Image (cartoon, rainbow, N blue to C red; front, side, top):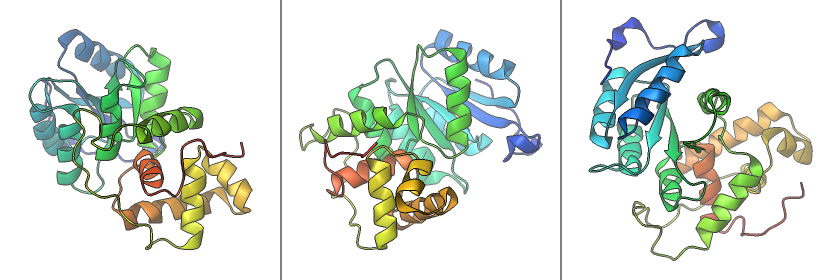
Length: 248
């Protein structure tokens, strides 16, 4: 386990010279150490901790306050889903972005992780360039996966049984959307259909920055922590239905 003193400072803007602080969580030593070594060698990134299980990840996240957590899903004891929930619930603002690691792109546990607030997922066999790009994208506030993958994930999720995927947390009834303005609901619908911020801006004849503002307000009103989680809520509440055209 690596646990440096967080008093050295928490970077918030890599472009300004501060590194992205990372916590790597995986129960397999070779996988964890390999990821950590790759990230340590990358410019603009700093590994502030390595955890071998969910409970250790929760403790280290509170102690080191990483910007991004690379979270394995299937671990003994506390799962990655449970650890993600705990880390985000207990985080001091700003909360870290959680990037889940999985072996299969449609692993049933991924859905639970997205509902728990993870910002996206990454296949464990992704190459170094993909990993570094994913970390940078998630740290910047984007969902990791491409729009087409977003649609495929969420549509598969909504076809699952009402009891939810194995290992998924009990999310209870989906939140209502009555708190959203008409424009916020429009933006959420387009994002859930797989459009990027720029594409949604073109569709609504507004700026990309305005789209991002509407989406951030939507997430705040609904108590969400990631773009991916907002997409899931849009499907769960019926704002968007599986198979609906995105007009791409």
